[in-house]
Length: 113
Ligand code: 5GP
Ligand code: ZN
Image (cartoon, rainbow, N blue to C red; front, side, top):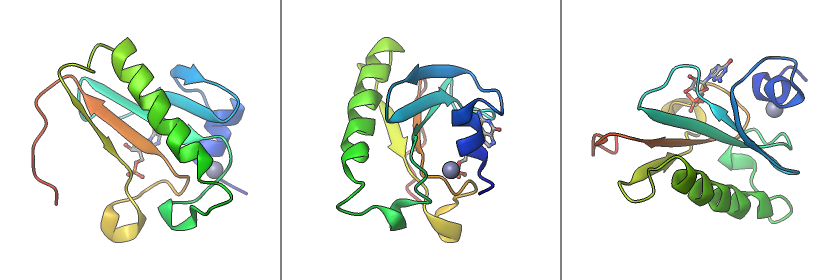
């Protein structure tokens, strides 16, 4: 399967790693939209939120634990940040390996759509 984020997780495509454990990988977004812009992805290939099931959803709560830990480490836990996962064409998803954007380090726009 040809998947950009699977290749990044494998190390076939370089990335700036921020955190890694058995089930998740976190790295800097190549085109940052805020001073802090990290992507957290499950190592297991899940295409989008549409493919989250009872069998694979444990990694999602773990991703939120990692988000909280990284926010603290990156100094944005007190100032605040946003966690976003785009799904499908209308949601603006461009890479079809489930990922969570962590955005912070500035006052973000409040528009939801
Ligand atoms: P989406 O639009 O699917 O929600 O988010 C995909 C994100 O992946 C975008 O913010 C984009 O900048 C980022 N991205 C795309 N290609 C690469 C890459 O090769 N390396 C890194 N680090 N980020 C990438
Ligand atoms: Zn993948």
